[in-house]
Length: 578
Image 1: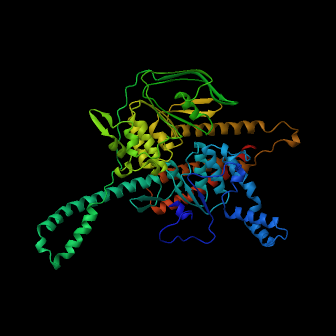
Image 2: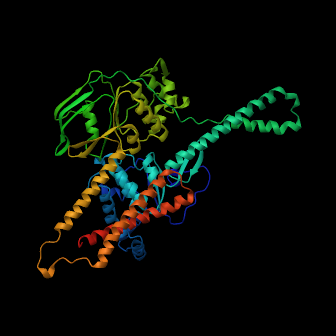
Image 3: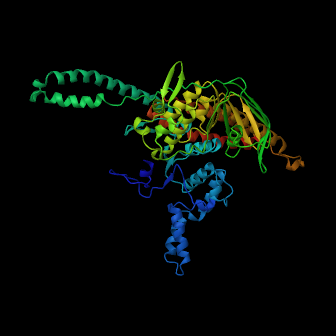
């Protein structure tokens, strides 16, 4: 659908109407750039109106007569094309890309996604279309993008499986279900509530249609001789009723329980591990004893060594020094970020049956390979199609099935949420919550981490690893509070030390009576605005607001943020003289 709306793909019939000269930015799910391009050159690679104008200007200047130069100069000025390169560098810097001469082939998945994002934002689009924008972005960048989109006035159309991102950025949700579009005026929490109401109403309607269908079916069979001209309307109504009764009944509440193999009390012990790549430290005297049934999340920016740590644990990478002692009963299930290489000509059901024909669930229950695949939303038809026909998300689901079918008792999951849809994520979350074994998860999906893990390892970079006893949301609240206190302490120290002793005539000026009153009033106003902002954010997430209230509060929120920033700057200014 996004490809059709952005003009990259055709459609069979219908009309797409857009405002004339509308600036549209489109971030594809898997951006592509030639490997030999530098980061800065990549920002000029995909055509947009400004890049096309710059190229047109360069062609004009290359011609000895400079045809149409006057018109081009006017257009360049109007489009502010002279500042394009500088603007590209500024946005890349905000996205933590500072080596503009680095070649595309040396970029990680997260860096490439950020370059593509910069490419889209440079043009200052009025309509921004994003396809899975948070895939491969670390948490810091995801939160930056979240805040950026909340504060801009552009129109946003986005496909994403990041539920916190949806909840905080979007004010309207469109769901595609069984080829039908459903529209919800509200955030993700509101959508979940209304979607459940719709499904329950639909299921009740199908149940009523089924009851009536049985009665009418009996009439159709019992009275063929009575079906004359007068009863034809009833016969036609019967066929309409039959369609309604045979509709699909939604059943997204699949629950997967797989028996894990026994795990002993000794899991693994890391003792004084060191790992570096040149001057980049990954592990610096890291020691840890993993306990039974522990569920650990690992978070940190891209490049801090999370995946390397998992590879060391799995024996796929060697530490520079230190020991790793793994218990004899530990049976790993490793889901890597790179995925699994499948035989493209193999059928989906065969790929799973190669692992096992039957899966033991415990308590005498078992599932066939086909039934197990159905739990992960592979229909019988899809099970008998070839692997090469699967989408990226379907391949990830198949990989997940193969990992879980081996009955592991220690799951190591590196970015398991990428390319998985929300229904599959819910199934996986419930499975991990009930999993009778150990789990380590590296993920940038904050909602997923909050539901699954009971504590975090924070990779701060340069070998600095901290243990936090809580989920991701609790960690963010703690970190924000810590940063706020440090900022306040820094401001206090700065105000105390900023004015050196000078001769009396140059002595630091004092606040006037009026300024003193303003300073005291500002403190109170900032606290009140912060409280109002918090109330509005909680109300927007509650899903209880009407459409009018939602619109009003959505407009009020960015204005509040601006007011808080303005008053805080004035408070800081006055505090230097207080």
